[in-house]
Image 1 (cartoon, helix red, strand yellow):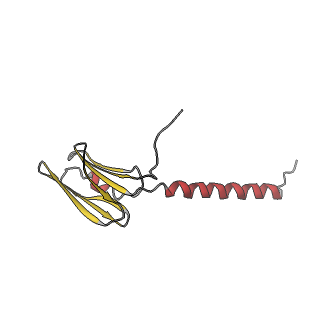
Image 2: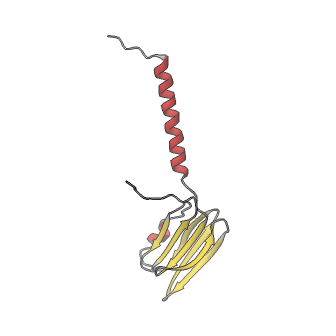
Image 3: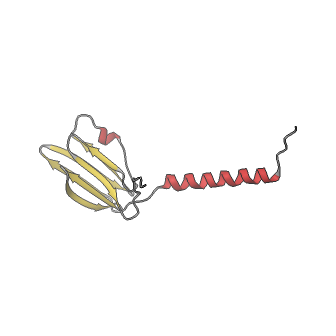
Amino acid sequence: MKEIIRKADIVLFAVLVLLGAAASVFALRGAGGDTVVVKVDGEVYGTYALSEDREITVEQNGHINKITIKDGAVQMSESTCKNQVCVHQGAISRGNQSIVCLPNRVIVTIEGEEAETDVISG
C-alpha cells in the first residue's frame, strides 16, 4: 500500500510547528518582575526598582556583597565568600529568580505582580 502525503497533512504539520514555536517563545520570555528584594540573615535589607541602575553594597559581620542592577537585570558582582558561586551565577531578570550567597547569608530575589508561580495545585 502506497502512502500519500495529503495537503491536509502538510497544513496540520505547519500548524503544529507554529503552535510549538509560539509556546516556546512565550515560555522562554517568562514573566517579568519589577522589584529587587535583598535579604540578609532572612531579614529584608532593601527593596529596589529593577528599572533603576544602581550598585548596592551589603556589609555585615566582616563580609561584603556587591549587587549590581543594570539594564533590567541584577547580579552579584562581588562577594567575599570563598566559593564565588553567587558571582558566577550571572545576572537574573525574571520574576521569582534568585541569587543566593550561602556563606554570607545574602539572598537577592526579583519579585513583582507578574512573577511566575512555581506551585503545583491539585
